[in-house]
Length: 349
Ligand SMILES: [Zn+2]
Ligand SMILES: [Zn+2]
Image (cartoon, rainbow, N blue to C red; front, side, top):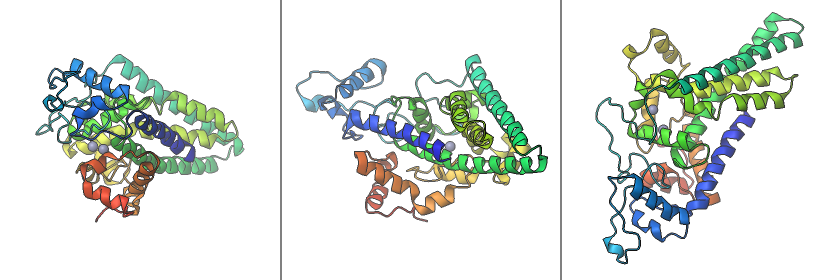
């Protein structure tokens, strides 16, 4: 668990550090016109990209001497400091249950490549799991009852830790980085965009919904961990094969939590009612601005502990102390920012 959490943490730390390197201090919404005066060349090129790719954006005359004539340009999901759904973000929250794809290049159409990636990933994870259980059986000298008990405990703990992992991942991509962030950019844009168009996920088929998470939690990750664990620790392989599968499936659990009871099969309602997958009421709490809690989307079992302990506010404060980057939730709620900077990490009940 620690190793996998480290992978997520390192990946997002790189994302946060990269963001910081390009834009320190991060430009604030509402001051976009000043971007071209930043010393960072990327900031200028970002504005140029916007001008060329967003026909709806107000045009900026590069080289215009009179700063007062410069209209603030609408930011895109690729820009640092862009927060989906925030005033000035250029995005409007659609009314009703309509699909609204907010990320450029994304589509609700399932492609053969998505099907191949998702099915290949789950087949591989299932194969590694089966081999691990078989190996465990040989290590216990064929003791089926003991192997079943060890396997059940491993799968259950992996499912629980995957919920925790989904919360840390969700928190990090909701609050840091943007569409240009290396490796995680697509996932960041998808998660942040989900706040602007929460119903879109319900229009996605299984593979269209899951394929993005098959990149960080796919075959290379589980294969590498299994190799590192070695043949004498098959339960480590099983733990991470299940963990990564759950992280990928978290988007399907998430989708179910946005659907009505009538829109899903009865076994899905049973999974939600028994706390196996994230429930509708609990996830609805996450969709209230400033999106500062209920980040876990596998089962939601870890949400209460994480939110009442103030774990994420503490993490945000540490990130801020290291590189000065502010969480998106702070930008949406000045009181939350003040409380966190004052060391008050618990969310108000
Ligand atoms: Zn979110
Ligand atoms: Zn949601």
